[in-house]
Length: 362
Figure (tube, one colour):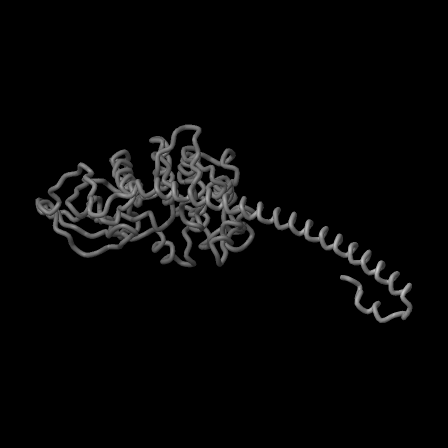
């Protein structure tokens, strides 16, 4: 800038040369001033644009903040006020009818106990749910829906019996059939090589399919079928199997799809991960359990949940490793038809049940 104009003043000694130099200096100074003006003009324009951009960004951020505040405000209006307890309309005489015993297990909102009926001494399982943990209306609806589902499936031999629902100021109590034979998962692990024979597996799978078919008949999807959610009535080897834990289950209208991802990673169907699932997802889960029953391994495995999901979406189950070469083609074909990735091409629960019954009768 200025190209060191001051250095020219020391060159030459006559007056004409000095005048020429002076004119040259003035012209050079004008040109430099013009260039500076242009630079400042460009800088002003740039700063103006930057300022406008910053203003737009600021306005956009303020708009987002307002929208977020509105959303939060809407959400907050859905929160049950502190200290308020929902009245479910259930019977209020639980303490008069039952005595709570030992703890069986616990979940997110409550605990399951053994309880004794004071009138006849019968033992039942009681799910005790804390009302003060139901801070959102959806939690209240989940409890009501679970009771409604148990009532809808009442009388089915492979579903835990529902006796009654009770409440007091602090808790909801769901009284159900007590199953003392343990989880299906424990039975699998206790088997030699952690697997069933084909015939024994077929007996177990048939009972699970009966539950799925009954659910689907009522417009209901279990959504969390896994070995941990099936209990044996007793410790006997031929004990009946009972489906339990309908906490994720929901009713669905024909042609509609669930858009949320629920269930357990190893047993979740591809369409669940794609957020467009229906009753077919229960059949997939039973297919995964059947695979495990026959070979003692999961068909889809990875160290992380995301890795499992990728396996479910991209890969096919392995039927080449032992013991699959020694398992009948009809059994392998049955499992493959349960684990078809396209839910439209997968067997329905009713179709799979028919195939399973035929297989058992052979």
